[in-house]
Length: 230
Image (cartoon, rainbow, N blue to C red; front, side, top):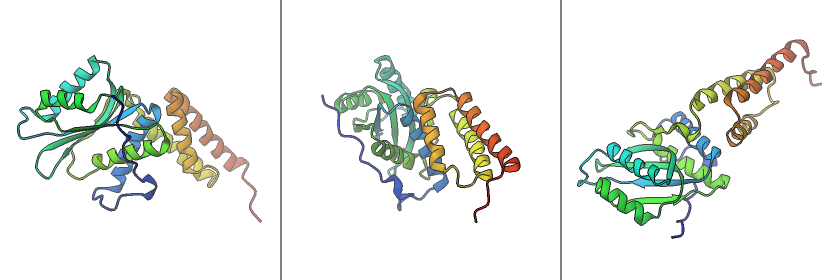
């Protein structure tokens, strides 16, 4: 069966959606967590799993059972997911997983067998930057939504400790930008982060490079200042 169309694009350049009622800073953090995994490997699928009054178990419990089955079949390798409370009081799971595509009827059958709720949605995410950003923004919207439960990801979604690496990298970037304002934009810094993810370079190498740039900038600032503009 052919894969379904990619997830509808989200205009990520438009900033925070008008209908979003959560914390914009939390939305940006969530977006970063998602897009970092997509940048590492874009062969991903966007999935929504519903619940129903007939469901016998908690959705988290049955989600683990589903993941176990998909892993054994070689369909799912890594994921990032969030549980959303709906107005009806039922829970939905929104997730992006890395792995092979599973036809919607087969996923519906599996979820109905495990959680007694056959209503599911699965869509491929295209590898273009526009569609990756759209899928990341869509999932981040649910992750940052008020009332949503805690989100989580598997260790291999990016790599273990990638959030700490990101925070350290931002610290070195700010040091460089302080001594050499205008010499390196935040977009340039993001490009370096994306290259680090795609090339899968060791985090220590990436941070060492940024630290050296920050040290050189500080040294040049004090000992070889840029000439003043006339």
